[in-house]
Length: 313
Image (cartoon, rainbow, N blue to C red; front, top):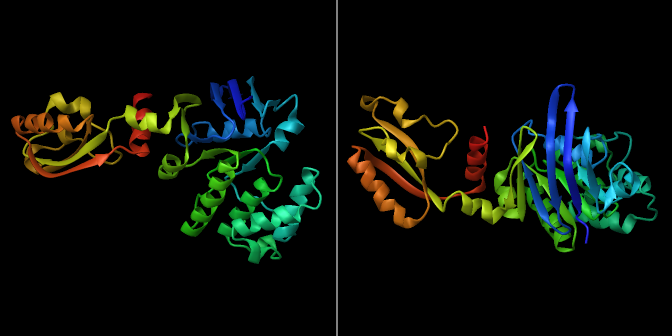
């Protein structure tokens, strides 16, 4: 069985700037796959190449076994993409928009499926409303419907819930989960890492146009410790022996940077297992640290993401 999406040594250059640097990954049919990375990592560039909107400088990409350049018609029929930007035609109603999109793929008499998509995205009441009269959240629902209207086996969601309400998120994920259960391959990019952790079977992380992590979600979480010990310390800076256990947290000032006479500082330390907690507390006491607050937290995907980005500078 061929992969749903196969990316082989893909590079994309804009003059001297390399947006992608030899990216290779394979997404299996029926997977729920997460593509994560900071802004500018190359996620949207990669999606544009997969969708045939941008040509790779080198390398090859196929969708359901169809090369996106040599067999572009079949590759595009196999793919539905929900873009980040709100792009719509202001002259048509929602139903007309979906009928026109169906026509792009040569599909006639598609109203039964259009009605089902509208119902599942809570758009049925807006079917005859002009696109320009919709709210931003409703327009984003229509973008999702357009990506699904030709029943593609592979669906790419590029920040689908950015700036939308909780109700849409819940409705969208219920429908997308159902499509995934029915065998559709889902590729998700998002900055809401809790969504990726809950939904995705496997995750690839990009940074500066390179894949810096690629594994099953559960394996990534296990690789970066069983948990973290969040502390509020006073009396002395963190002992040097415990520095390797520090977990970087945006906006948290390092304890060493705070003079002892100022008082308190916060720090998070990696805990590989519960048996490591007592030796860690003993080391803090020996170093003169007074523990004002302590909380044991489980590692989540945000912790993993921060750690991976830190280690690949």
